Image (cartoon, helix red, strand yellow):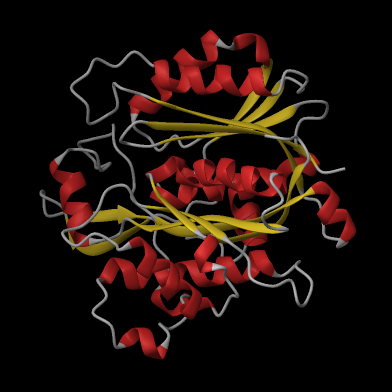
Length: 353
């Protein structure tokens, strides 16, 4: 992947902010918005989740209301549209249709989301001019947005499009999902501290080559120094012994792809409260410790808005991008994400020039 790919636009829609700036401000101040809801767990206690109030979401498009959508899909469409629209604002009038590389859930309810249909419905819900023929979906959970970014960089480097949208959306505040996670003892409760708060949200970014961004006079919010991915065979649902090889391999590949990058001074990660993920990072960091500043910062905003599932990777990219102007000087920022079913992905960012 060439180094000259930049982030030119960002949109976020989360339980702690209805825009990228609001979400970033809340995350920076460690403002948490985790709420008890009416739905009850196996102990008849309210689930604690990261959820947006219904009146903060736009209504479902009239033609989509006539379709037999599941609660989760309808909610995801309403979550995605505001973030998508915000991310596109920097593009000039007449920019044309933009391909969308979209992260979607890896764990489904009883009725899986039909990915091509979801893309078409999102275009109708948002009104955005999307190149659906060139768009792709990545049903890969937390890491999906970072996996989508790597593919988008390839498209830009090959000159197939002047701009590419990368994003992710999910709603884990779904009765079937909550019940399944509770049965697996993964939801944080008073008696289960080794768990997480399910959440919902969306994040989108506009990518362009640095040359195109400068030609169109777009803001250069961040430069992408490299990206990498790997698989963890001993993932959280696997019977294979966990060794921490997946994330460690992703880190090693990332640093090999960007040998001139400054050491990492800040890490944005998908820690959600489960001990598994902290142990994984410990293994990966120790195997790659020469690439990190000794006093590097760790940012894990799930403590503010819960686990955003397939939106998490894209949301972290947005938050890291907006924090770069005040991030550790003379260092790079790493964003990484780990999915339940083994996908591991990492990206290195620096401030836009």
